[in-house]
Structures are given as structure tokens and as C-alpha cells.
Length: 551
Image 1 (cartoon, rainbow, N blue to C red):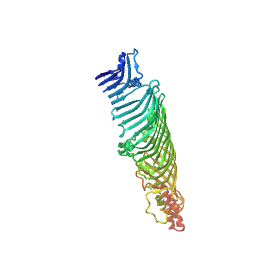
Image 2: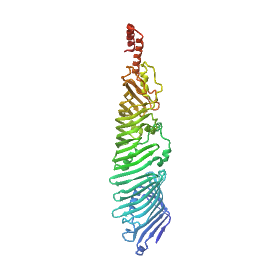
Image 3: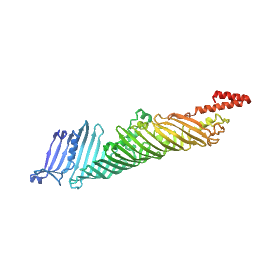
């Protein structure tokens, strides 16, 4: 026996239900119960319902009340025994739900739901569903569900078995989630027994668990080779942002947003995220075996491990992020080994004027959200080592030989100098403050020409000012360099000052220190004049010139 209900309009201010309506509804009654003078609903079919909820709290109460429905095996019976609700089959088609709260509207369109053989004794029964979600003015997201449920009324346990969730819309390719798990409806806690996720060729496996009291969420995923250019082709086809464009825009991108998300989601609770991939590709940047392991508690996020293969080397970061008021504070330790500098500079949109293999350790603290703020507020220090260092636009050996040529008797000079310099391994301690890297005492060399010094590299203004103190041990700088016989140059410190911007650095960036050059030229003039005089005249000229030069 069935009862059909036609188009109906309803609303309830008390329940927070705005003006709503349904097109058709059918209730299938158990005729055997009718013979016992009792109304029993076995099946419910609803088509074209349009429901508007105006209060989020009321929506949650309605959803909670419907969480464990009555079924054929365990009906809900009225006190006088004349009415029984025992729905074993539910069919909902063409549904529409609008949730309006605090000026925001979320719409669930084309809502479809179908179940059969519903029971509350833990036996599995099938469920299928579909819905289109439109939040505000955002793009629609389509969700399809297929799987099995098991409900146990006494223990309030919900079993999810072989659930397949397909989400279409937010990404160019559908997101397909397959999971099985258990949910405790009393404690509002649960965990997955199996979990897999795929987006095109990207595949993940892992698990998730959650609890409401106390609030906790733990997520663990492993993935294959992930190509962001395939997942997000619009981002890949967009023109790369240059350093100048970033500066013009104020550098207002929140770099810490991915790390702050777990803190915001937990709302003072506790949780962890562990993600490991085979590789991650974005444009031409490839991260090999990236690993992220973080633990969140209250307003603090501990970065246990953030590591990846990068630029033919390895980068590892640990630290603590404290979300204090509106400005996060980050304390960190970073270690890198064998990073290819030319590749790194190319990926950062810079000309690869510096080459070599960089290893470093850096400990420090910073605060802020944007790239500029984090760099400007960074304070720390460490040490670095560069194997096979090279500078493509500056030839330090040529600069030294040009100074030596001022006092050499042999005027033969090499003309075909290469544009750059290949150095011996470079080591240095350094500090960072206000976006400036301060090399405290670096050591390197070119053949027999030793090189040491200190200086500043301003990462914000993109300029450098470095003192390079050269000292020749022997009579030749290198096999392809220059011969130096003058004792005024050999075995003496000759300072060169390298000062320029990253954009204009070149052959003229390094010049002899003016005070040193002045002294060398004065000595050369003295020698020339004295060589042309004899005896008392030479002594007189020498005394006169010393007085003129103040020496």
C-alpha cells in the first residue's frame, strides 16, 4: 500500500527551515501492520525536494537526529503502538538544499540518494548518492558516492566499506577516494582501515584518524611521482613570476599558509601530518623523495622533518612555528649538501653567474608571512662550503695580474683572459640579518693565488660588496696565469674590492683597493726617478718625493 503526496510547501521558524517545497513523495506502508490497526512506513521515496535551512546549528541538529534512522529490523514505535517508522528503503531524487548562515549561502543541487535493505544490526547494505555543491560564488563541485554501510544501533558504530567518492570540479581531473573505516557516532571519532586517493596519474595511499573530544586529526600519506603541471595545467601554463614582479606586488603571498592550515583546522587541538612522495615536479623544478612530517598542538607546529632531494643535492629543515597573534614566529635549523648553484639560480629566475656545489648549515629565527617579511626578519648564522666554485662574469686572476703589471718590468700581458674565474674550494662562516648575508671570513684561491676576505650580500637589494685579499705564493698565479717577479707584489696582501648589483656584475665589478694602488704607484714613481740620478742627487730626489707623498 502506498500514499502519494503531491506538491507541498512548508517552513518552520522554530526549526530554522525557510520557505521550502517538494514535488512528490511516496510512503510505502506495510499492509500486514494495517490489519493490526498500526501504520508502518517501510519505504520512503522523495522527488524534487527544495529545502532551505537558515541556521547552521539547526541543520546540525536535524542531521544528528537522522544519523541513525529506524529500519525494518528495529522500528521506532509510538507509545500507543499505533504508528511504526521502519524505513528499509530510501530514495531521494532531484533534491536541493540551501544553507544560509551569516550572509553566506551554500547550495546542494541535484541531490540523489538511494539505499535498500537498511538495518541496524551491523549488516552491510548498499548506498549510492550524488550532489553538486555550490559555495557562494565559487565554481560548482560534483560529488558521487558508492559503497556499503553498516550501522549498529546499540554501540552507535558506523562501518564504511569499499566507499568510492568521486569529486569533480576543483581540479582539471577528478579526485577519486576509496576508503573503508569505522566511526563511533557517540564519541564522534573514527579511523580508516584502508585509504587510497588518485588524481589522474597521481596516486596516494595511507590512513586518517580523528576525534572530537579532545580534538585530534592524524593523516599519513605516501604518493608516487606527482606532476603539478599535469594536476594544475593552468598554473603551469601561466608565465613565471620574476623577482621584479614579486617586488612590485609587495611579495604578499602567504608562504606559511600550508603550515598554518593544520593549526587552524585543529582549533587548539592536536594532530600530525606525514606525507612522503617519490617525486614532486612543478615547471622545471623537481623534488626527489620529498618528505613532510609535522605535529601540531595548540598554536604551535613542530616541523619534525621537511626534506627533499633538490638541485642534485639534499635539503633538510627542522623547526618550530609558533602562531603568536597575527605574526607567526619560526625557529629553524637547515642543512643542505651538494646543491648545484647554477641550477638553483636558474630555477629562481636568476642568471647562473655563480657555479659550484653548495653545502651549508644555518640556524636562526624569523617572523612574518610573506617572502619579504620572512627574509627581512631572518636572524641567524652558520657555515658554508662550495666545491668547484666559479664566477662567470668576474675574473679575479686577471684583476690581480693587472695590478701586478703596474710594477712588473716585463710588459708582456695576457690578452685572451676568460670572462670568469674557477676557484679552489671556498669555506666561510656567515651570519644573516635584515636580508643581508655577511661573510665573516672566507677562504679560497686560484692556483698559487690565495684568496680570503669578508663582505656583504644584500638579498633584498640584490647587491654585493666583498673585499677579496689576494696573496701570491710563488712566481706564477697558475699554469695559464701571469708571472710575477716583483717583491712588491709577491708574498704580499693585495686587496681587491668587488662591489656591484646582481644584474650588472661583470669585468669592472672588482677593482684594486684605492689606497693600495696609490702606494704601489708612488713606489713605482720613486724608483723611476731615482734610477735616473746618481749619488747626492738621487738622495735629494728621494727625500723630496717622500715629503710630497707623505711617506
